[in-house]
Image (tube, rainbow, N blue to C red; front, side):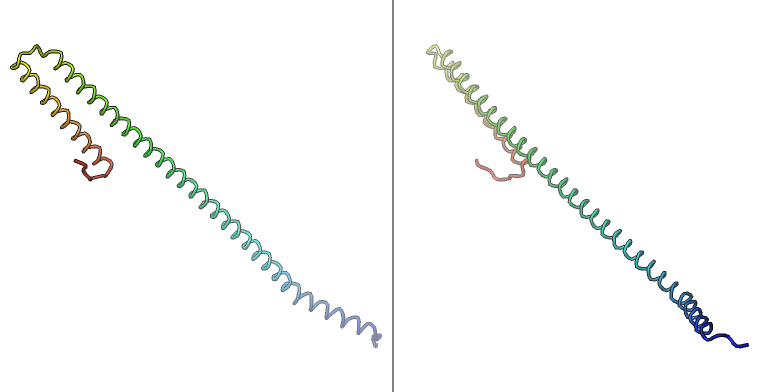
Length: 150
């Protein structure tokens, strides 16, 4: 019993289709899944890179803010020191004027009393000057400026 010719062609075509399905589909599926995995991995890497970039930018901004705050604090500290130096200068001038005024007011023409009073005023002024020099030197050392103007 002989099979008709078209059945033979039909069976050959079916065999070829089955072979393509068995051999080609798994390879196609494997290729598809590999491409998809690479694409997902690339997207994940790009997202991680972007996240790290954003973190670096945020860290740099925080660093700059800390530096700005430190500069503001340093400027405020310098301003306070200048105000304190001005205040001490004013206090010294007031003490000097008060000492001179007191001496001039106490002088009754008695030469000996005037000399003792002048000596006391001079000692007081010298001590005030020495105190101010020590204070100035201490402030310079705190600021890291070791130069001396005296």
